[in-house]
Image (tube, rainbow, N blue to C red):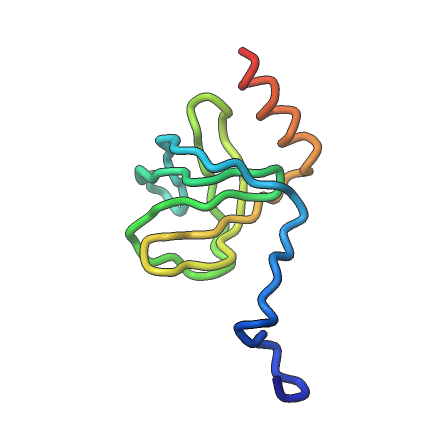
Length: 106
């Protein structure tokens, strides 16, 4: 890797996630602007989620992800590759963890 080149080489790839993710398949809805669209939640953690969403989304777009059993999560788009979108939750990780645990018990 050249000095100042922020792109890691294939052998340098590291997972920098702060929170463990649970692989799931939940129906969800993604809201941004004045519209709401169906999506599929593929994994979730206290810090974010990966969803399947076929429409293009600009990085840093602010959205709300609704999952029936958990409610709504305010998030920002951090990446998109084809129909996969990475979301970073904007709320405190401890509060999100507590919501997920409480909904899983209920």
